[in-house]
Length: 326
Image (cartoon, one colour):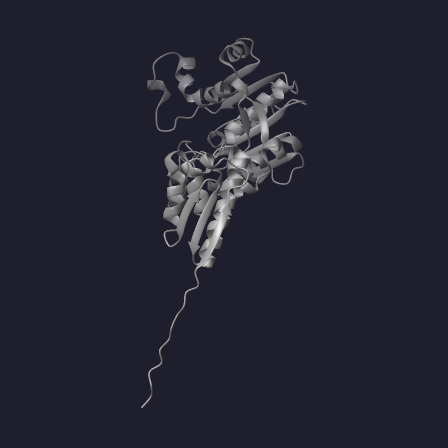
């Protein structure tokens, strides 16, 4: 008769003190410890106690190591961006925001100082890539989903170029294609009908240039915002030109736009190839241009993806959900 064996499992419990170096504990813990409490909820199997700039932890050594890595990433994010929203926090702790921290530091990323000296930076890797490619190429195609900062970054580059006198004017344009609504049913003349359609471009400019200065620029045509059709017959020189929502330009419109490029011009084209609003089976000029212009020296392509989305955290989930359906 065999004697039953008694197996005793001893779980080794470790203790560790994690120090919050280089950040104010309030910035890390959040108001009323909201972020610290959220951190504890991710590691319920550990005993975590905060004491000023020290976090004392007790539990499984492997789990403590993971917690230590997450705390280190959170500290790096605060130091780098001087902020930590709950969305940022959730992305970092869930392991989805390392790419932001790997991007070059703030001093390199400041594109310009907006009103009240607020710095505008390239935050994500592909925003930074757009900045770098715009410095090397006179024509850059920036494609990717909504909310990735393609247009905002491009306009920041244009405003910076204007302020540094690299160009004498900024021209922003969009193809006048309805996204579900009919322009003809809107009140006012053609220019008034287009105002809401061009509003996102105005919004970005207002974020970067004081209102009075922007009005002056608009009045003297230093900054021009117009539908793509208005570009026909023009030569756009000594200008920073941005074609937004380029997926809604036809092949002929796209070719027309690109051939407006003067010898001292800088062009950035932005668009989302998954949101084409052209009628019927009309091919997108942007999609065809990506294929036709591939490999031409002086033309760069930057592909944004859902990791670059900086709007509400649900936008990323929405983009992924629709991507699975396509």
